[in-house]
Image (tube, rainbow, N blue to C red; front, side):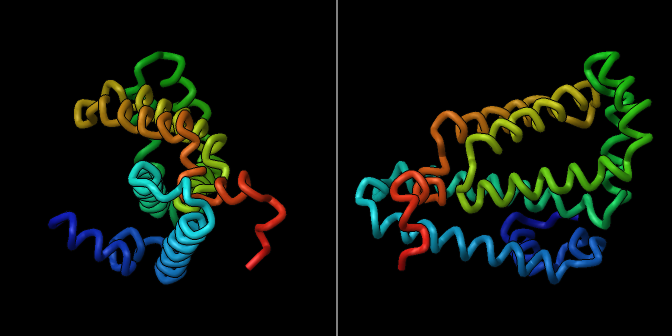
Length: 205
């Protein structure tokens, strides 16, 4: 049960949520998330130091929004654990077979997705984790952002007819990630900026 956004954020950062406990590897997830945030700040600081063009409120805002979307995907990936099929993931797939916007989508969910859950679960988890790593670090943001847009579009159409869902939520997620693609947000204080600026200097001090 949620309490308030600040307390809930603290529980997430410190690995004390129910999802962390259910994953069976909460401490490792907390360590990984902390390492990603530290790496993101380090990459941003290096860009800020080496490239004066990066020193703007626009780049800071883009970096901040990109990292938060990455945090969202990281949090969302946790309840796909433990692999290969968590109870939460199974419960999330079942409504698509009933509430998807189109008949063919419902048929696919019912006749294909539900029968390959042990394969689908790890694929979905790795996709969401990859999106989280990409956005938090700002690496390969454009290609991963396209995947994120398609992923959100699948959720939009897959849950469109479910009364408890608000379809605009997924539309917003599509456009936010589309913004990351169009603006090439990885080049705003991200690893993509380091690659683009001087590939030969990535190992330099």
